[in-house]
Image: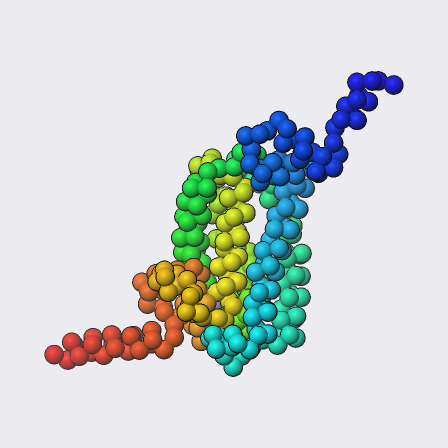
Length: 302
Ligand SMILES: [Zn+2]
Ligand SMILES: [Zn+2]
């Protein structure tokens, strides 16, 4: 027997924890998250699979992890006073029907795309190694993505409200006139792909252009974007909701009216596009629009 290979066999750890401990010995400059990350790729020995599993698990964990608190809040009568359309609390049956379609879409539409992600990310020059980029770099990139995605979302979503597209594609998402967190991704696969492009394609183009992009930033961005989408569908408006502190932030108050009235408030994260294009929804916006028209008419009459 070859002693060398035998000794390698004995010392090379084959468990995740073993690899982590071994890697930590020689990489003291890496922080705990970087070590966990590098050990995962070393353990898997297959980068496509490593990224694929990580992406899918992360998406499911964040999607349901963020939706479950809203399901619990729906079940607690105390919070009813904060529900925007207070009379419409989703039933358990509605929530379950929604979960089934969302899961079906995750496994049939999103899973194959997630699987293609690693080869595509590599081809675009995305970094999957350690160390991670500085948090300031990641925060800046995520802020830029929020602004670009919101623009894409505004125009694509507005287009989806055009008769034929609405009837054949977007109508599914509007099944719930009083939305709840889980309904964020309740949509036709076509819609998931077109609107999802704003979330996925923007970082890819960014990576291609700058050659300065880490997959971790992608994960953090998608996590932020999922939080935004689920919270916007929660149906709850609190005195501590983010838009009270950031007036240009859309939040649930903005998107809930869209589901209730089926018109206006097309943007995802911010209020500026609806403001500039005069597509704000709700009684206040309608009142402002009426007053503006009256003023215009009065001016003309003078
Ligand atoms: Zn819509
Ligand atoms: Zn919606």
